[in-house]
Image (cartoon, rainbow, N blue to C red; front, side):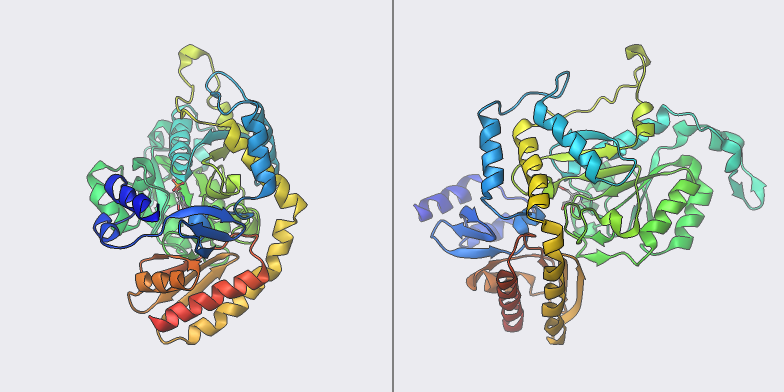
Length: 439
Ligand SMILES: Cc1ncc(COP(=O)(O)O)c(C=O)c1O
């Protein structure tokens, strides 16, 4: 059976972010089931899920309460559309999401994954300015070489069509999300297809202010991964930078989009990374951990101000013409509701804090290893940067020892489910340490 399913995989499947030539040449791991923090392959081998099945699993696999919530919903209905109709779990979840996200985010627009949540944020910001009059243009004269530029530039919000993004940004794989991305390996081949964005260096507040001062009349929004740039290899924002970005965006009348797809739902130690600097964005994208890692679901949240700019008579054509077929799927929303309940019942965030400290302590000895360049950690997001390109051998060694990891180039990522027990976390650290030592 194991051999057969592996052969069928090789014959029919094309795996994401995978060089298929390597995949075909090697024996691959096929997962059959999960329980708690463990994954089991088709041969019955057991592994710690060290990356939360691509950063999504929160309370562990096969959680009794989430299973039950999905089964209960299944007995009512699996899917009905949100285009022109409502459904009960999607409505209840929207209310809960507004309650737990930063102040001011009062409206929820659903989609299916992180990339679509970002795509929606970009279109929403763009369309907002097309439908909005700038109230007080005189407050922000655009100056260049001492002269005040054509006032039309500050008055015509329709010119606000561009975006600012950060170097090394990753916001997903659809064309809009790639346009605001900054990882050459993934993005450069598509450049002819992409719209141009302004790129700024993380931490360079003066550079950002200079750009905003000169170009605010043409900038719709700035998009950031708050606190941690995950896919870039767990790069940390300097303290205070997110707050400064918020203040500058407000000062120059540019919307702030926070992409919490990777950082949301407890990953950084708080429910959302924005909370570390008390920041409320104008638009926020969430996905990955929203269902506890069970089903594809995402949401883009925004303010009343932005939402209101889309209200009008049909013939005014202010409607947000965007929507995916499975938007607000009831099964996924039921899973998300159950996951949020577990956050409360199991005190997930409070119980996480000593485990974050344990992780920090356990990582200390890694820095003494000869081929470890740097260790970066925020909450349960860890990047161990190696000096040589042994990412792949390290994860294969870890697999032999009973842990599933996934590298980003030569950076080993650790991102276990928040529910991991202390002894399991110690085991994951030990396996990772041994695997790095041996490679
Ligand atoms: C910050 C961020 N945004 C967006 C995405 C894309 O999410 P998805 O893979 O669900 O489309 C990711 C995925 O890793 C991410 O880390």
